[in-house]
Amino acid sequence: MSIQTRRERERAERERLIVTAARELAEAEGWDAVTTRRLAAEIEYSQPVLYSHFKGKDAIMAAVAVQGCADLAAELRRARTAARGTRGALAAVAETYTSFGRRRPALYDAMFTHLVDLPFATEEAPAPLWDAFTELRLVVEPIAAEGDDLGLLTETFWAGLHGLVTLMRSGRLPEHAHEARLALLVGHFAGPAAHPLGR
Image (cartoon, rainbow, N blue to C red; front, side):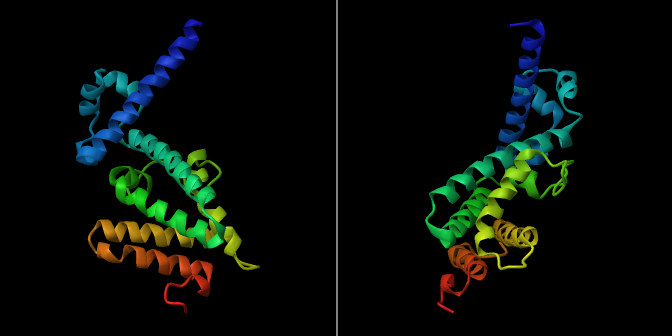
């Protein structure tokens, strides 16, 4: 192994350690606890070493968001491919998405709530962001009517899921009706046959 290759691997490993430490610290104590000083202590590197990889906390949070989108895309893909039928896939992805947001609140916030320096919905968006969006699009596509704008339809489905996650986590919506709300959302998108009240 050349010296250059070894250095590149070591650098990639340090970046992975920084991102993992930030993610774990945020999940345990919230994003306010994530500081460059605290991260440097957690991973036992100096702050200058940390800054040689990331400009600051915002850049670290953006890296965490990209990693989180990769994780979300993988979970959504597993749910979609394991489900039976169009409505089943839509319901499985909806449940998986909302479960992810509720299980991993700090990670979800980095991905979709906090301002991070990441381009969304542009060609410059990192691949994991597109991968997660594509998993949503793949379950919406079969229920799109002729002439529907598939991108807008997918964004609307995503917005519904995001709203449920956000409102439930903030205590604005009671937990006990979560499944009924998901069924209503899926029923609205999939058509009357999927409506929980048979309408």
